[in-house]
Amino acid sequence: MIKYRPLTSILIKPSGPDCNLGCTYCFYLEKEALFPETKTHPMTAEIQEELIRQVMQQSGESVSFAWQGGEPALMGLDFYKRAIELEKKYGHGQSVGNGFQTNGTLLNREWAKFFKEYDWLIGLSLDGPQHIHDKYRLDKGQHPTWSKVESVARMLLEEGVAVNAMCCITDYSSDFAEELYNYYKSLGLTWMQFIPIVETDKNDPSKAASFSLTDEKYGHFLVKLFDLWYADIKDGVATTSVRDFDSLFHHYVGLEPPECVHKKECGPYVVIEHNGNAYSCDFFVEPRHRLGNIRHNRIIDMLNSKKQDDFGKAKALLPRKCKQCRWYNKCYGGCTKDRIKDPQDQRQPRFCLAYQMLFEHADERLKQLADDWQISQSDYTQSQRTGGVFDASDYFLKNQKR
Image 1 (cartoon, rainbow, N blue to C red):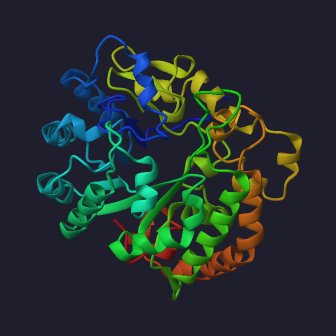
Image 2: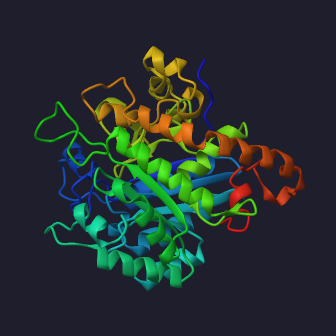
């Protein structure tokens, strides 16, 4: 029997794979080969309206839109102003959130004022200080972008916009956990997301690309990062948010983690490309994982299709030693794409050792935090609950909820 998946979030590629940068490790630029009909790939007004109509009508009390790319700012600000109007037009009293993942280079104060007015959450791709960011995040002419992106980060914060630092961790940047963490804190970016990069070598498809993060280096990075994060917990409240640790904490208090990386199965959302095609995950935008098109199919049906269910269950296709590992019910093998992008062993989780290192190092402290949470949760009011279920992230971030 297929487990019913409610439509609570949707990831949208309004400009398809189009981007004004040419980052070395980008996996999405090559997706333009899937859409050869045109040189650029903007979403039409018709597709935008049909998408938002379906999401608003097929979702429950709350739903979130994640606008991603490529670079979503290529669509222009008026596209997103219209999105707000369509959300209002087709809504039925829901709580609606909008997230916007961007390289930042096209943003100005007009964008910032819009984000602030409608309480959009911005994921800003800023890989750290200059020597880290400019190693791989270059424009089409291979020019550095750090100076521009950092200035945009400061501008967004000045305008009161909620900003998450999106940091891609590579074989190079993994050596600088403390520098990265302190850099973001110094800017005022206290919400951080660290994304391990694994890509197949384009010149030798039998192995992972040289910039890909190795298992052991990722383990050392996570251990160091955890110590920095833990040291900033003051009186039971974290002064920073590291998404991986916030999500993993849910396991320790018996709740479903919000991030799919830490779930037993994949597939809690679908991706909508610029032309209305729906795919199982943005790391698997490819023909065999195409679920349909919103012009002919309902999003809720594609989300709950057998094809999406099979995709989700494939995460559990792991070696026996994984199922017998004491940490299996905490990591569940990590993200499926990290196995696929490493051709040397597509069943073995690439970051098995890394997660073992993290849990061996952090387990006792996470258990103690969970015990403290269990004792204190009865003191929280109903207004600090999410959908009728206590949100474990409130334990650390109760003074910083968006």
